[in-house]
Image 1 (cartoon, one colour):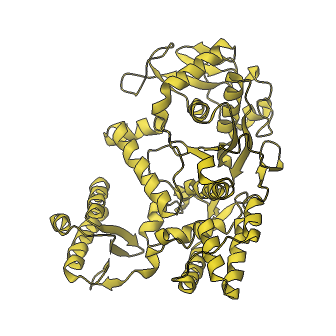
Image 2: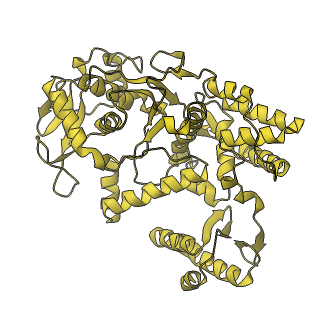
Image 3: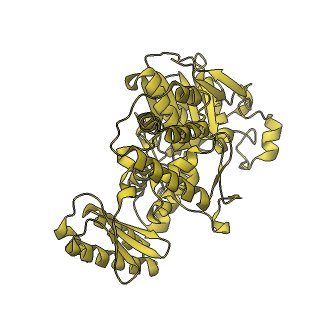
Length: 469
């Protein structure tokens, strides 16, 4: 087995992965706060750590790897969304959690072994907070519990900043009850209209950082192998995780290797709503960009480099994938070449793996091409449907993509037209509900540039579809 070498943010160098327990290699990755659709930048760490998960499973065996990725389902943004929409919090988080899983599944991401929700681990968060107070690392003030940053000598080592630098460069909440401006919240009070749980400090809810520490400890122990996430989480989230975890459990080392992916740009610019280049994964999927194409573009840039999403890259990726899929149609996967494993084991060098796949294509090594593709989540049967779509267009701007059944096509186009009217009238909740109902009936609705598409996905329930016209 080749040695897996990964860049450790904590030591600023590549290190050979030496599992604490080779029979149970453990990885924790920070997951989403579920209040809205995942944007394209949210998807990058999912794909990055999906590649690592696949490599670990290949090398150590699927039964010997535990991958945990959490859902933050209690947060001020979620509370604000509930007030804004008038919808119950659990309804919002349940819906957006499923959106996330569906959208990441469309990119070929395997689901982690465990996907804990923060609200399932409140007692563990309260217990860890109590432990930190008892050990002198946290204090109660005006219904809040705060971690005392000065009590942990190694604070700032992960991000390489001094406390003074962090105070100068961070947006620090000014609060009179803080002993130090950098002290961060472990527990905060909840008003009557906010979600809350009883605790020794009154009714309240956890701070963001304590969530991951408590869930990681409960599911993986006080020491585990890998902790990952986007580099925007390095400070303060991961820095705070280390501090509270190491102080609560000084006998453990928390995570041995820390990995961070770089951020994503769109057409050379930072993605933002103000620039008009902000879009979700679902936006791209609805516009007809296949999930496999999105994944290919992600893999074309090393995870520790900024990734620039461009329309040209997406077009080139689609052309390449169509070519490869035509070449390997009907061919079973062979063995993953040793060279591919070496490249992936060298800090996930996915761009070099794609270069190898181009070489295999030119050489006619199609069984190896299939095996390599599936190793990195490409060329799988699950992601193949987009290539074989048959498009039937009516006289308007609505397309039916299906199997030639005119009756189903007419009903699907009618539903798509109704959906488009709702969108134009900004009736987004109604439009989302209709889209979900159409999918239950076997029709996927999406927007591709100026065209609305209704695609047959699986068996169509004609009675359900008829009722939606």
